[in-house]
Image 1 (cartoon, rainbow, N blue to C red):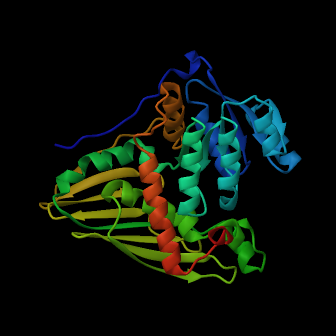
Image 2: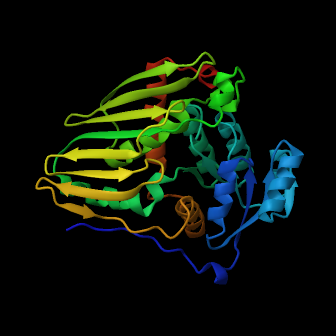
Image 3: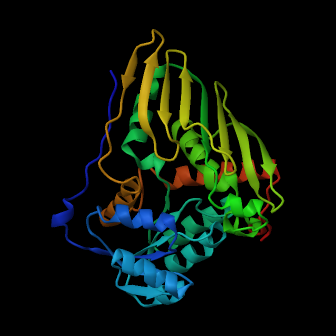
Length: 346
């Protein structure tokens, strides 16, 4: 009745043949996670890392045994040593850096959120198409076996009437903010804030499962730095409502709830779904996921590499259409909240 979902690696890591050379821009904790996952992906070699701080690039390279370091992303692109790049820098820089690489004929895996607004997102895809290269947003949940199991089993719930998708995580940088020190995570000029950094996971899951809404309602608690600390949005559909709740200044329950007329589906962790369980109207429960063998970012990296290897430049799970739909709604939500970035005025 219920289908579990699991993905195995494309090839055994010990027997792989390297065919794609990749560089990394950015040396924060997300880049660390990227490297840990990328080591399991067949046909991929990490050859360079770039940070504007030379010591950070060298420390990261030494930690992960990456042979070349750069402090200028343009120089790394111009050296003709990489086939693809992973972009993990402040949100406001995603568009311009990605465009530079795309115009050099280099494939791009860009960290979420893809860009500051919907207009930039569309431009990134158009430039990729023009230069016959592949660009994809690095978004964990929609690529994982657990999420694919969720999507595959939604029909067992009958007509879905409501979903509550939440993600709240007290930022490690918020203590500094409360002391009067505004770090990058809370700067308007960097296109940051709760909806962009945290709520985007909720929105991605919602649109991947239910499609674009007919309308939206949104609200936020704004901080003095000009970004949202927490907020919520209601995605309105003809037959259901989907409630999104997000926060960078409080912790929230990790449980997610999808309610249908014939049953409910719950899982833990909007950004890295686990422990998916369906409960029918009679109270009988059905776990539908297995333990995932690989680190969370493995699946998106493997999909990115496989799309390039196959030459179709289309991800089944993180498609251009899904990405554009998400960012069109994301921009609408920000406008409804009154959250405007410098990039929106260009």
